[in-house]
Amino acid sequence: MIDLIILAIWLMLPAYIANPAAALLGGGKPIDLGKNFTDNKRILGDGKTIRGFVLGSLSGIIIGLLQIWLAPSIAPYLAGYVSGDMLMNVSYIAVFTMPVGSLLGDMVKSFFKRRLGFERGAMWPIADQLDFVAGAWVLTFLFDSAWFMANFSLAIIIIVIIITPVLHVATNIIGFKIGKKNVPW
Ligand code: CTP
Ligand code: MG
Image (tube, rainbow, N blue to C red):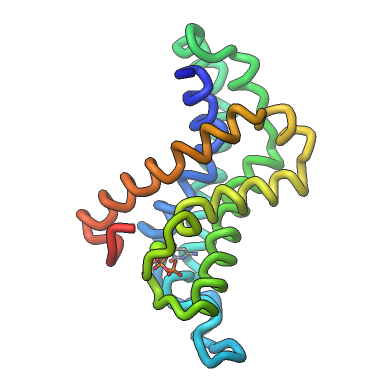
């Protein structure tokens, strides 16, 4: 079980990093440029910024590249849990699609949040926690389905769906405490 949890976190890390990185490094011009949709509500809202998207994506990509480079040195330490083959089975496409997809998923979520009348930062349980997982998986599946199928077994998918909301809430509470998030979700 612990082996699957380690592997799940390893596989998701570039996507996981993108969100807190966007929160830490984001700000400035909103992606929707302040414009409203046909319902006279913001398209995405001030919580989705160009800088957050770009720097959040880059942070995830950098983490993914570090994982690729460091896998051979990290593998021996995790040998009792995860096979080195699993850690080293990486894809340069996925390193890109996991973080970018995660922030795209987050944007799609915000689009629907605004349509439903939720203010920026309002809580939308489940969607707030799994939006970026869905985005990362969809984009990765579209661009590298072979890698996705080889790594995301049903067991890994279930573990990710269970541990992500827990990890997400934990990081958001930290973000709130250090003043980087307006609300603890
Ligand atoms: N952020 C950003 N750009 C992004 C994504 C996030 O700048 N593309 C920053 C914003 O400062 C945002 C914070 O990260 O407030 C937290 O992100 P999130 O919780 O996804 O946004 P919310 O402010 O809660 O907005 P929403 O209601 O649209 O989810
Ligand atoms: Mg939020």
